[in-house]
Image 1: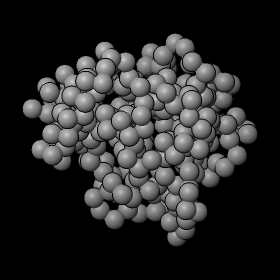
Image 2 (image 1 turned 180 degrees about the vertical axis):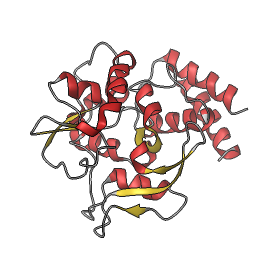
Image 3 (image 1 turned 45 degrees about the vertical axis):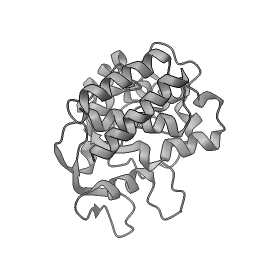
Image 4 (image 1 turned 45 degrees about the horizontal axis):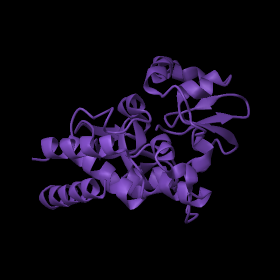
Length: 244
C-alpha cells in the first residue's frame, strides 16, 4: 500500500509541475428551503442545515415560491446520493459557510472573490454577498457571471471525507476542512449537484479532468484521508490518462 501511495504522489508532483457535496441548503424556521441561489440565502441566519435540496424537502420543507425550477434538480439528487449515510450529517462539518475573520464575507463569498477574473459586485454597501463577477468553471471551461448560478463545490465532498477518515476527526478539523479554500471551487450548480458525494472513481467533470483529479488527490493526502487500494490505483490511472 505504501508503495502505491508513493507512486501516486510522485505522479501528482510531476503533473503539477507540468500543468497549471453538495452545497449547503438552509431550512428556515418557517420551513422554507433556501439553496444558495435564493435571494434570502445570506439573510437566513437561524436555520437547519441540509446538504441537498432534496433532503431539505424530504424533511417537510418547501422551496421559495419563485424557485419552482429547482424541483427537477431536487428529484434528480436522489439518484446521485448513496443509499446509506454511515452516520454522516452536514452539521458535523459546521453549520454553513464560516466567517472566521468576522468581516461578514463567509467562505463562499471569499471563494467567489478569489476565483473571479474581474472585480466582483456586491449586493449592497456592506460588501457581504457577491452577486456578479466572472468565473471560469473548472468542470466545463464555461464563463459564469451571475453568482446565483454558482455552487461552491467541495472538491473532496464532505460525505466522501466522512466515509474515508473524517468521522474520527475533531469537529474543529471538520469545520476547517469544509471551509478550506483549497477544497472550494466555483462551478455550475447543476454539475455540483450531479456530482453529489462522489469521488473521481465514480464521477468526472466534462472537462478539466486532470486539474480536478490532481487537486482531489492533493487534498486527500493533505488531510490524511484513507481511500481504498482500488481507489488509489484508479486515481493513478486517471492521472496518467488525463495529464499525459
